[in-house]
Amino acid sequence: MKDLVILRNPDRVSAKVVKSALSLYFHSQANAACVFALSIVIWLIPRVGIASEALDQKFDGVVVPCQWVQVVPHQDGVVSRILFEPGQHVSKGDILFEMEADDFALDVRMAQAELDEARARLSLAEDTAARQAILLRQNATVKQLARQSEIEVAIERAIVARKEVALAKAQLALSRTRVVAPLSGTIGQPLVAPGAWAVRGIKLVEIAQLDPMKVYFYVPYVERQRALDKAGTFDPDEIFEKFTLSLELPNERVYARSSTPLPHGEDIEQSTDVRTEWAVFPNQYNVLVPGLKVHVVSHLGGPDTFDSPPVQENRRC
Image (cartoon, rainbow, N blue to C red; front, side, top):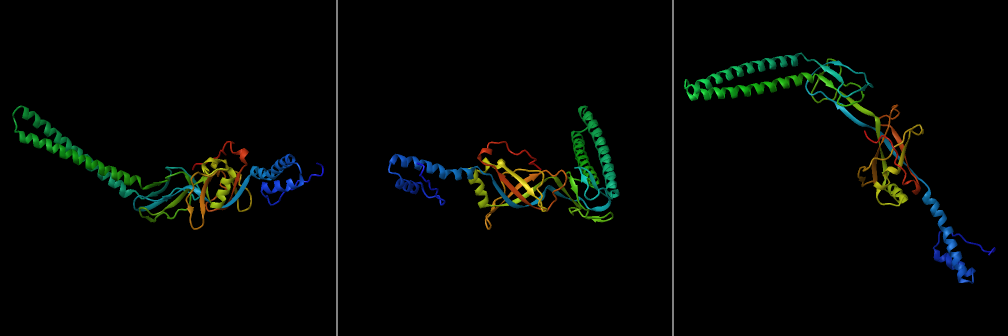
């Protein structure tokens, strides 16, 4: 037995070939079977080692805001004041621009006066209808006059309702002379100056939510399949949260915070067989800026890590 030499085939030949070679060396069928089993174990050792290794992949990515909006006026007017500094953090509801409001304030006063007049006319009509109803019960008036007074009350009530709507619209127009932030975030450069005529719907400024930030990255289909093969599954949902994502910045430094992929990325681009995936990264210190090109490093541990808890990071915008 000390002269036994076990040949390990570098080309991973079939077990049948290994068994045939060993049978030529041994005259005993029993001994050949034992050595064959030993050779199979030796042949499998490298495969087990490979399966237990982690899988690291690197993809190109781009940083984008989680949310961003264009701030627009809802009516035409002259910009009178700008109430923010570029780069400032603003909260939802903060006043950003003021527009000249004199004409709109006059419209409110006019609408209020017309409503007061309509309510007074309604009161007179109601009094007349009440008197006609009393006289009708006393047979002191004709039924037609009583009915006419009731119709006049209904007309005056409709006029009051219309005037109330007109006042509400005038008040809404006045309130819109103050342009407010629709969400919290970092505000950019204003695109108008005080004194400029702003047209309804024109962009005045942009606001971006910069903490957290989103990163989209491109994953070739073959690389996606490598990860699934590594995990021994056909269902990406089984291992989605087992990936750990880190960012390699342009200066080759690794970003301090990690994340996991968002489920259900975009469809595969048929011309390139590339799929766009997304992830959310905390950005407390504004290291990540919109448009920054990064490398997304995906790490998938060995099978012994598949039952571990998922990475706990901010995954929602």
